[in-house]
Length: 236
Image (cartoon, rainbow, N blue to C red; front, top):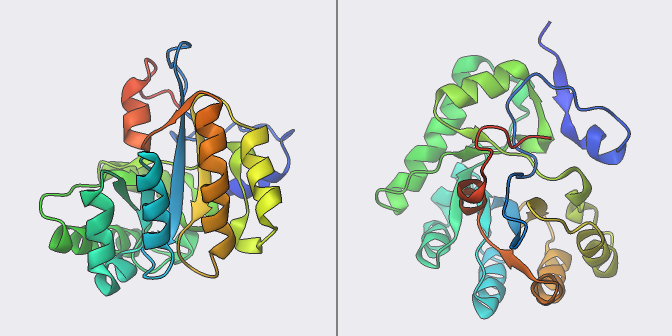
């Protein structure tokens, strides 16, 4: 039986054992202890309203993030997608239309990824994104295998960095979640599309200076993976 895995359950209950026989990335290990790095990642964009605000803040602090985009929104807002790349950030694949992946056939899944690749390539010449994040954090072993066959790395986020910005919990709570669980190699999950992201914008405005003051550099997921000495062994 192809078990459906809801990664959010592992984030909600830290006592659950993650004995998953699949190659996924949740945070990056094998880093130099003398340097500290974290990743800010944003799902469900690009948004014409919120992504530019986030890009302004990132540029102000000269830091770079990874944006897991929806192909559908890339087609709506190509200028925003183009700006993401032009300002040194990373674009990654989050499907075309944000479906529940476990309900898709293999061909439907591949179509979602390839349509997004096509949209990205149409607005950003020669841009190849090879990171993928599943919608809702829900997937199966078959999902991972099919995605990896296309050359993608399967990227989630750190178990303690499920900030739940879609629930609008309040900026103070979101900032506290991030700062309390900072660790070298952490991948932070946020959203720049898919709803009201005013709190997310304010959160990164407040939390980035704190992260930097604590001695962390904020870099893209691919940059972080390239710094790891345990390539291919980056999952929890």
